[in-house]
Image 1 (cartoon, helix red, strand yellow):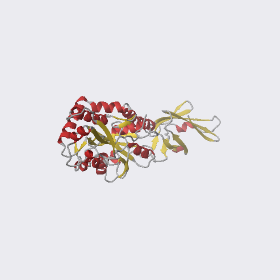
Image 2 (image 1 turned 90 degrees about the vertical axis):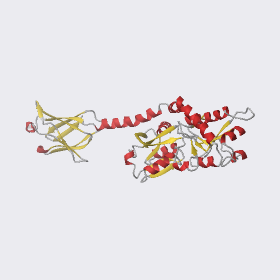
Image 3 (image 1 turned 45 degrees about the horizontal axis):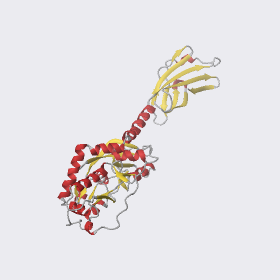
Image 4 (image 1 turned 120 degrees about the horizontal axis):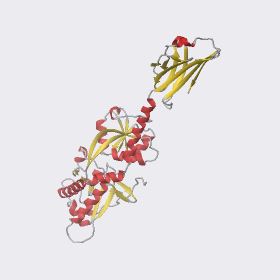
Length: 386
């Protein structure tokens, strides 16, 4: 699959008509219809919502830009039949508001969040997408949750509404800003940061397509939400009404949701399964094993083995000091038997009354039933697992 790459060379010059639209120039609709060019600012690296495939921008945000320009074409006034040409202008998130105010672009789309800071200088359309922010973790490094992010180093996309929300919500954490979500997850893969916060759909797409990040996971809990809208020039009522009309139609038709699902495919389900499967395996690995002990002795070993009857073996955990006792030793003929449910770990298996002690490992890879055979001989005690 093609990864997100830069396209659309930056404009090297701005036409006089375009430059005049920053403040006090002609309304955006009139200017676009006159010049037959619509300059749309974006950050085209936000799959599955806005990204490049085969030299073309695709995804629900790209469709919004296309439909707005199509509506401008339908409502154009004045002579001439030339179609309005949509020209995408690539900028950073931090640079998009200035590009809009300075007249470098006519409007902005592309996972552009409504923030109080941006509202000081530009206008926004009605929201068309609510971005659910998710935590991305590297469980091999740190298996974090939204509840224990204090002091963590968190990766975010630079200049985004995500960065603003994380900065406000996790003031005690250290933010590390990246140009793209791909850069952030690669840093997480290398344990350079502790976590990433970003749009859940974008996170799933990145974790499914960036090489070498198959062990990274999306945490189910939601960090928060930000509303996504088109950015417009202030006091441009005509353009605001037109864009809001297009958004209303697309929402009514379910275009945003259907296109997001189409471009995301099964990636969200696939990525969600990573955490579910890992936790299920960990839970299974931690399940107590049924340890079955059998005790016997050599015929020529002079000892009354039946003195062990009704005693209990003790499994003492070498790390925690906690202990598990077996059932009472009972005899089946000349063989004493006992059992215990023992979680995986390192133990000392003891029979205190007989001053018996031996190290024993119960491994997560062990079967549900672990046989332990103890043989008393004149040369000592032989213990065999399995």
